[in-house]
Image 1 (cartoon, rainbow, N blue to C red):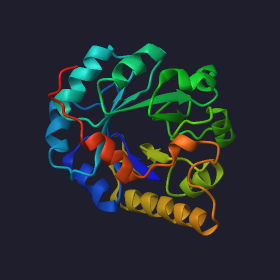
Image 2 (cartoon, helix red, strand yellow):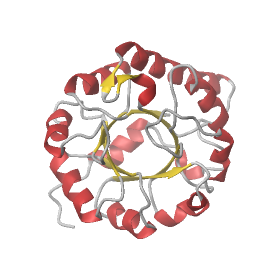
Image 3 (cartoon, rainbow, N blue to C red):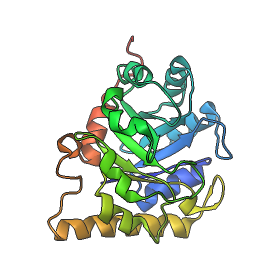
Image 4 (cartoon, rainbow, N blue to C red):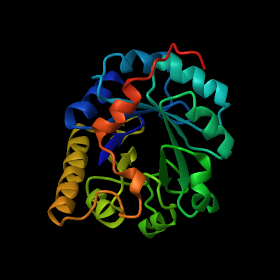
Length: 238
């Protein structure tokens, strides 16, 4: 199971997340208190370990601009967090290593998530970044064969319950590990990742799959993801 710490705005917080065991570090390029300039994000990403997966978060952005920022910043994954049409995710999938399509839990589009062709589906609360938790039972609406990421109000106190309930491929946290918007709390980051790893280990002890048994394409590790994204040549013509 992968852990993503999102809403990163500084090198200090990015390196903190990695040091605590995060697999993915997220940078928000959409309007937000956590918004970061592509060049600044790029400078931070250059200092991250090779195995770390930097993710750019976009909302209803022109796909050509998403691609441009991905190249500029050196992103290994893009997360589409708006009302993008399936064609946008499909177009980007052929041009960037990884595409994550986010949906508010309960959105009618969730049942048609496979149409997007994304590498993973993220379920979030209706108001992203609000710290609100959604009903995790809604994760059952994600179609068979999709990697599932869970976000929305996760924190050190509830991430274990979320993992036990949804058995996701990845968990994603923002507000639950912050002092204030855009600034991480080192203790909360450490506690969140420790709780997530403990919950993962508990599932293993119980011989439960880390990804729901009906999601056959989701059983990949952090190393598998790095193998896929690490070989991408950003200079390749598309």
